Length: 625
Image (cartoon, rainbow, N blue to C red; front, top):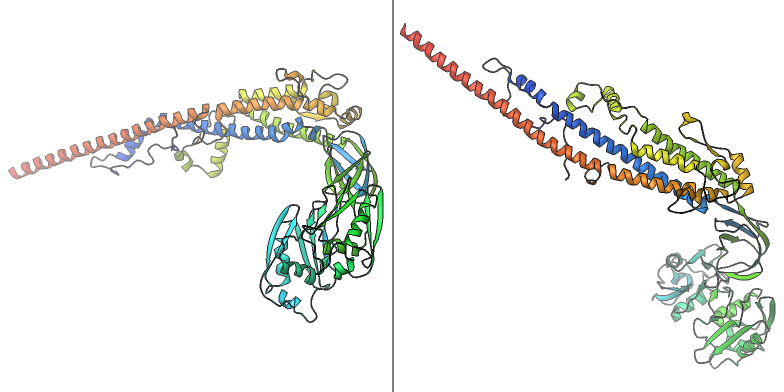
């Protein structure tokens, strides 16, 4: 049952039938009724004060429910975790090659790291200035001298995500840049007006990073190649799945895979270029001469290069495929003309390359220069070698223990202050009538004392205090050796007057950590047996006992000070009972007040009739004379 707020004055809202001063009888009726009601309202006032004290007590309990719960979840629970009690620190002997960080799962060992290749994304840049001579940059049509204003499509695929962009030649190149940047495919575009070049790159790295224009219509592809003059994007690390032409290879009319490259691809020119193929430690550089080499001839040279490289051309689909027969194939070291040939003529999508590392003698590839292995996060910066050292972060552990001690002392002080706070039974909650004759400062001072000691010697809070002290001071039964308790690692209590306040000897703690870097984790986080708290670590014990305290407060006062949402706690039931009884008492008091006024009304009517009769008799007596 939820009952609305109860007034300290049960008659404040009553509708009186009369307003009296002195009656015909000379009686001050209002004053008389007020005096009669003053005595009658004493039980109501006393009940209202009890209800008010119960509400204050509920609110005070709720304050501690929140503070204990916060202490338990935000502090105590964290000390059951290795990330707090056993933080690790990672150092790199060569920070120009890599930097590292370690989490609590990292083992205290050294790692050998060799960075053979950094992960890269894809970047394509206009090979020359792109604006036609005398062209205006107001629109794409003006800038590139396009013959039509009709829209065309550009399709961009990266990391398996494809987005099609509709390009309007009547809009500027900056609009195209925005369209690409907002496409949601992790591709960033930029136009440098000073250099007059268009740049496009992936924001992700690794072999899955690609700028693939397959799906672009013919007008769009012509725009990319001939107007934006994009090309020369890198073909990154190539695995056994390989890379395949994003669209059918377009050879000159009448030409095929057995034609000279200069004839099959006239735009390629006649200058030789170098193609470097690397797989592991095997490297081969091929010199490709477009005037003497055919596509089939280049395929044979790649397959016979001795680097586990495999190339092929499908005459049915018109697609070229390049892959590693085993391992990972890289084209790093090839000249720009080779990259241009693969991307612009053979239509291989430009792709990034994976990072290639040797960690503790094992060759690994990663799609990013930032990755985690066995609790260690590596940030690769350059090729080279480094020794990675993982060790307990003793300074951090000491700092964390000090933070625990400080938080524990704050919580303990709050509880001990509350249960020892003096209660002033002579200071009851003030009614509205009482407040009306007092200064604000006096009301504040009075109310402070009235609220004092609401939880004086409270059993729930006192039990919580006792449990906190025992949980910290008792040794952990499952541990052996020199360090088996909080005191053994420098966490002790002050004298009796300090009510169990913890003190930390950091030198003693550091000595213990030097002997056993895991000792704080053992003292705080040992799980032990759920049925035997003595085998549990400090934080595990505290976490369990504080949960019990929170549950007891919930039973006593709920999780909120509001009785409209809490109707089941002991105090909520008590408060609502008070309110029910106050409502009934208020009704009876208003009925009593009405009866008093009705009785005075009857008396006044009787007096008026008596006065009228007296006047009539007097008039008869006077007329008979």
